[in-house]
Image (cartoon, rainbow, N blue to C red; front, side, top):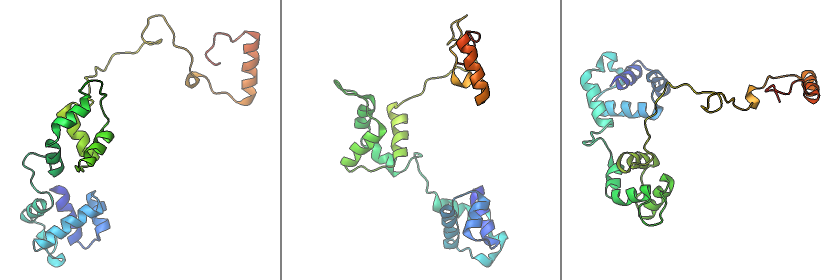
Length: 187
């Protein structure tokens, strides 16, 4: 509701849609939808900032964001009709079947005439079919050198080596040849 109110205020102050969207932090198309809904509700640009009342904002919100009784839209309802098959594809249930990716599932559904946004399908597969559910991670433990094995040092990596210029590189190479720098992590 706050962003709708900000869009309407900026528009009533006389700013263009680009500036209105920028000020409210929304997309220009979203700002246009808010303004068009307010105009359909009877708002005119010369009405002044005071015309952006709570009632008007409520009407605009109802117009641009229709109520969804279960919190999901039409695409989700389409997916519910195919839930059993989607879950089978996600889990790879069946003899010798591998779990499928969401991209492949989207393709198979499209072949059946079910076209839904990828993101909706991904959310559906995660929430309803257990697609790649994340396990709990315990943070706070310290990592030891050597991958957790006490007393074992990890091998030197390029990122751990000192950065040297061309002149110094020759000196390091000479030390390595003579065996003086044999245990350092620079080479």
